[in-house]
Structure formats: C-alpha cells, structure tokens
Image 1 (cartoon, one colour):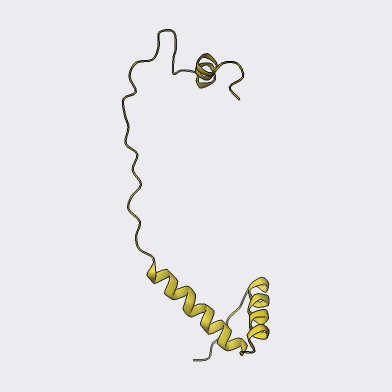
Image 2 (tube, helix red, strand yellow; image 1 turned 90 degrees about the vertical axis):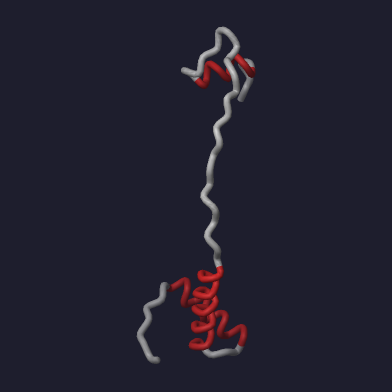
Length: 82
C-alpha cells in the first residue's frame, strides 16, 4: 500500500541513520519500526490496580498533633530533621 506519512524531523533522522547503518531501504526500516511498535503494544498485559491499605498506627504521644506536619516532624525528629 502506498501512502503519505509526515514524520517529525527527529524521527526521520533516526530512521535515515538506521537505514544507512544497516544498508536497508528507508521503507523497510520504517515498516520494521512500525511493526515492532505495534507488536510491543499488544504484548503488554494489564497491570493490577494499585491499592493502598490503611493501617491504624495507634494514638499519638500526648502533646503531638497531626494538624501541622512541620511541627510534628520537629517534635519527633528534632530541629535538624532536614
């Protein structure tokens, strides 16, 4: 099949380089790259959904609050927590 295809300059340059490197025609290099790209997409499997399980960490020490993370870090890790 004959068709017109507009390639980005960087992609066309990479295809030309591969064509020169392998001694194959530009058309063959383009077709192989498209086949590899399309085959690779089909081969991917669906990943399981990412889930986060919450856990009860118990009560905070007396005098600590979750209202200010910066204050909580300073109280638990010290002034040089960074």
